[in-house]
Image (cartoon, rainbow, N blue to C red; front, top):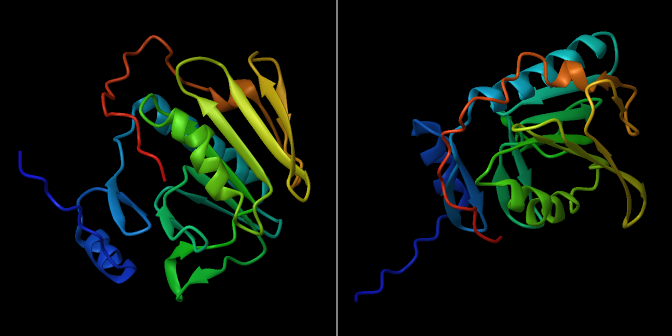
Length: 203
């Protein structure tokens, strides 16, 4: 069997390819990894959270971004697209690119079957290298279940979990509270998730 060498790309090559691509890919230290497609539940949850944050922060000095905005993590040389990000104050851009930021305070990921293990472990580890990062929410799209991590001190994080629709989550690093019912508004747990992509590889 012939062994094919793995192709590695520079960040400049990746960004040029990404601008012309019909679908999004992550960049992981030289490798380009296509992102799995999203479901309607995934989109609904991310949209619900984004809408509530945007309304609450209308007159506050916070910025909210969805997955069209890229995140650059220089310590691990990774470009990725979190589902929702909150920035305190002005966004800091990578090389003056207004499509790529570097300073999120809060990151929210809606878990997909193909990526949930990666989001919980390796991706969280990578996010913790970002100096401004202080809060992480992982939202299950197949049931009411949310994991909430907030930074309490250097290298120390607290953990909370939510699994009832009458509960609410109060963020620790920014002034915001949202009910679980609002997060899952119009989400259909009976729908079949069509994602069949393999588990995302290790960083």
